[in-house]
Image 1: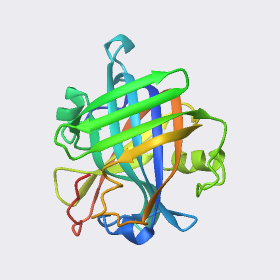
Image 2: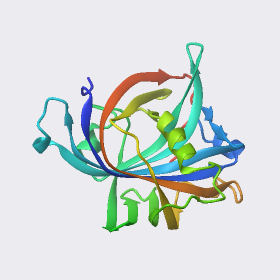
Image 3: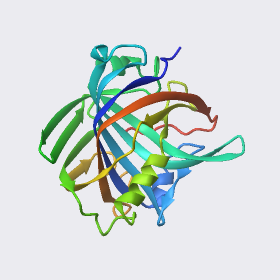
Image 4: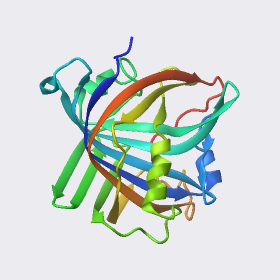
Length: 249
């Protein structure tokens, strides 16, 4: 049994993005997923999202929950029933919410891991330091809002990058059943992104040389979203009997 559609506020969402050599990315993707390419590169990243007032649609806002969350994401394509789809594959989710931790994979899609979030925000500056309690994931992002777009990005502009990530609203995560991926769709009342100039970035996932050898991954860009009303909608599971084991972040 799963929750009905739930709603709330995206108080802050940072999408930190990396461009990755396609063969390196494909090596960690289970079937049926393949990398979605931009300018010849696969796109991976981390979503750092603070949610507020999260609750089922008929529950008053005052009873909603707040949490800090992180999701490692890979832009992917796959075929299902003869149709081609695009979205994101999410190999790892982390949260500071006890309810999300124990409900993930049982009540709503995706298993989660407990993590500590050290968040410092002032004016247009953002610094988020995440450490999972199982020691598997460490993320650090430090940056500020900007009107400039990085010249080295595979996306030609903020508009192009924003449109790409808006199209990837459906995400699939490994479930507790091997070969089955649980789906979740992000439905925003509006989609508005700003550029984030990153001074410092670290990801234990993307800097793991056993997974991504030297020269196969580079930081590309970062986007910021704030004050967005949204809904989370459950999607039918995606099954693949030949799925490979999921590597830890």
